[in-house]
Image: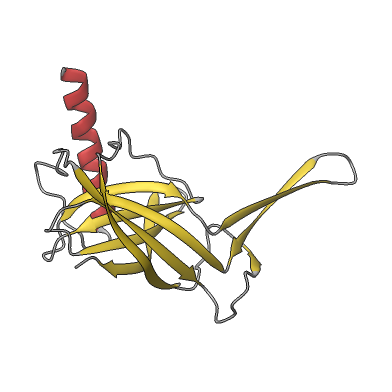
Length: 177
């Protein structure tokens, strides 16, 4: 039990440092651990361009990406509980989702693979495999979050490594009410 408390304390401190950079508060009790019997699932259309087709752009995963246009396509209430995030491990090929209340307090968070990332691998002339990542300009993603009436917005961030730690680059804010 003491090991779990220590891990939760370390995770809360990591969250506090990370979220302070984007003006989101993490209180001393941390993110709520209560499990609700329902959750919401948003289907979101994400577009980085005005074209209707999906265009692939080379992804320099550390560089600035244009803010996407997002639209909620579906909003469904589901029965069940969401898995609990056990560790805060970020990657440039993920997105970080923060559910915050009206006073910018973090109520819930999650990470998921960045739906824009498309990986291309091909052999070079010497037979080595070369990897290149691209961003798809138009994607659809599903985000499941607690059915909590206090959640006012979902904030979507792209983790960017600065050489010593991750910073969160804001991508979008979605109202949930």
